[in-house]
Image (tube, rainbow, N blue to C red; front, top):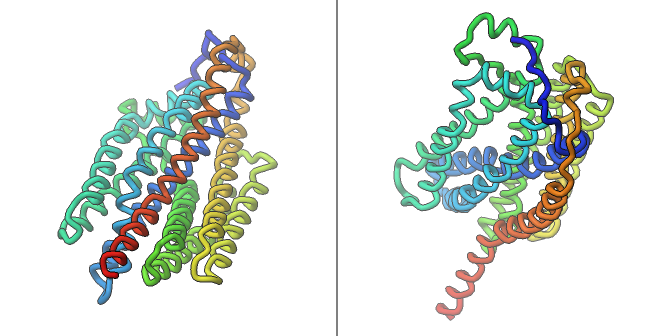
Length: 365
């Protein structure tokens, strides 16, 4: 299976600009994506713990908060995932398309799995809280999103390894190949667990109920610590499996781990006093910056692996600056709007709960 020829039309903007936009849009997608995967696992754990614990009210409340948040977080994930996928096809199309052909049947499974996972999240957010099917629905959602993660790891890993295509295509032309890389998957999964822990800690610091707040803060800190600590060996393992290494890769792995540790420190400082929501948000921001470092690392891995097969014809330029000017303005406005909506969205459950508590106290008084 030889490499396809370069696109005759050419790129609508310089390659460096398209690559920068790819990293930017992927970073925006990565944040809610990790919250979706890690949050679903955390909500499932909390759901099961609530049923197995003698007093599972705190876990049950945390599960309910997460199930209500996750459908909207998943909507952010899917919406923000469109742009980086389009930029990959634009800049690295001659590598991405053959990989997606080799893994065609699993690649086609992304949409059905997303539909199942998304549907199960809505069932959890609106269904009877005491229903026996809830853990099974949560398990279906978690397995669906983990399946999507595995498919993306398989296809995107194969995108960066054109040297193996010919043998795979000669072995089978049915689109049934699988190229899953465990170090890459663990690299992403540990980040997802850490981000979910940060989200739970933020929920706990904003909760008006003291008992639930303590549980959510401690539980979130434990998950965030586990994700960050395990991310360090997972990241180094992933780094050592790379056939081509850019000089910035190892510093980025170290920076991501360092930012994760800074985030944990912020959560610990937030716990010195009972409630420090601003410090908890700083912790989540630290974890987010660590995720951005990993997004840059991912791009450098791809570029280092593919650069020997990229020719001058692949970077041929046919500029469309008028279109890009409109795109740039809309992109800035969209990023600002999404950031504003996302913060309001995360704060909404705690504010609503606080209003209900105040209303209840006024009625009792």
